[in-house]
Length: 360
Image 1 (cartoon, helix red, strand yellow):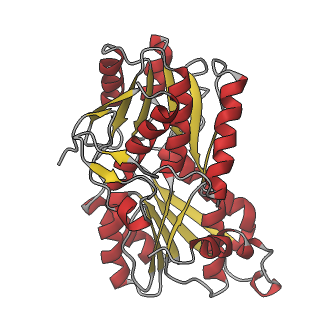
Image 2: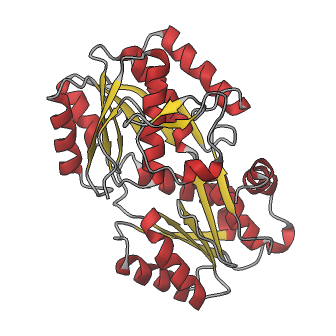
């Protein structure tokens, strides 16, 4: 499914960012639509996609007209909004939420001349492409920082849904922690939602009351970061740099970079070169990065994490290299082996060191 990934990313994200040919200069602007699963806040999942939309505007100027609809629930609401955007003449529509995948595919059948981009989805069609990022690479690196910084050897993790993408992140984070601190444990709280600041905050506070001194999360708001700041704890920002919310609490941020990909895909439609496909890029391709260290993190730890980031980019460091055991004692990756993409994409377990179960 991800054959020739490096070439595909390079072609999608970089080669096609050259200036538009003059023949498009006086054409009607191409309409590109974006559907967001939560409100646009100052940081978080939706903020990063909004930054990607803005990058399209900046790069392509008057040749494109972008619009967005925010806070659209997965399911029937999403289907209605996606269909409305197609009817309104949008020629490419980005739907960045896993629960938008099926509504996107359904609407795409009705509008074969419109291109759709299912972000975090995995199903494709002639006019539907899928794209995602290897967030787990950033999670592993953040785990290294957390493993160095914790004093209680217990981290918390506020998780949305038990889908493979989230399990990858939890497991990579735990493996990163335990690579530098074998005594580290990760305690998971499942919310079964992506965005609810009050519940995200409550989960964080519960974890802090259980001796957690560093926390990570896979939800859509900044509430976990704010809770860590309030309690004097440490936190890993996700999606965005969140130092404005948690200037003392943030130790590192795992950020997602969508601008280059979105710009390339819109331009491909403009030039009649858009093709369906399935892209899965990570640190190497510039779609995931770590950094934005907080004031508590020693320079030695910062240097260690950034050096490992280079190793991930080069392929020298593979987060899911064996031996790996799950948290029920079963060997899932023998020594000398590593998970392939298909195995990573179907992950359905938690690794040793993670306290919790995979919810249904």
